Length: 344
Ligand code: MRU
Image 1 (cartoon, rainbow, N blue to C red):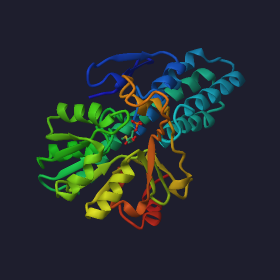
Image 2: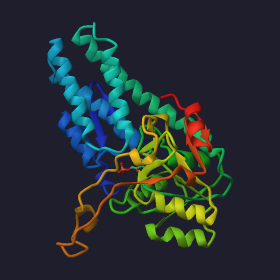
Image 3: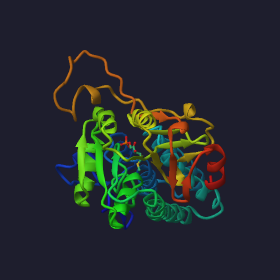
């Protein structure tokens, strides 16, 4: 189950806007098409956009000069350009900064060698993301009991990472372990990542699941139909405050009220320890038209109605039972325990 491929210096991606109806693979030949694929959520999910952005730099290298000064300038510009695609998921910045660091450490080499180093680093980021998902899933699955009813939000599986996923990766692992999970999938308005992508992944993996409207979660919890909630993250501050898909905070508040464990699953690359608290995280605001139309169809409101479309929200760490990472499970007090476990 792959969502991007990089072979012979060529980059391909599964266009997630076409799912679940069509499985369309597209080729990304330019940095501009890489930027657009990220911006338009054709490639999405925090870890995946990091890996994909790194490869988007690789496909751009042939167009860059072989003269050092010009190359460094072009490379810097390309990094900044890709970073402007989306602001919240720190993995995008983290992956591009890794390429930047690899270049800085090899400034004395020829441009040809530096280009090879960039490609090598991008491939390493990709491989690491795959193994990170495995480790995270093992730690997470240990928290889940047999026959658990799990609620999840947005999409955090093999479409959102280059491995098996984060929150969804944990669920896949429990299935492999024979724990027989049942998953309740928030449809995740406005772009329906839950309905279109998570439901598709769970169906492919033959995991029992029910699609629910986002506003059903409280009723299900009230009726004791949910044992735990697992979500992903786009950026986690040093305090443990977490930015994730809009609607995550609702679930955390509800989980607290109903005394249900609320887990965040994320790799080390999703932590941003330069930010002390969640309020410092930039929350992406998207075009209101995504709210006013369902998947680009007819208006579902008067065309002149103004819509607010925050793509993410912030869950304060006090509402999070534990953060599942590839390094282990982090419990409160988060400030101290994140610092202890996360290499940043
Ligand atoms: O806007 P999206 O679809 O990129 O948002 C994705 C999410 O919010 C995910 O929960 C998050 O990136 C974690 S993916 C493993």
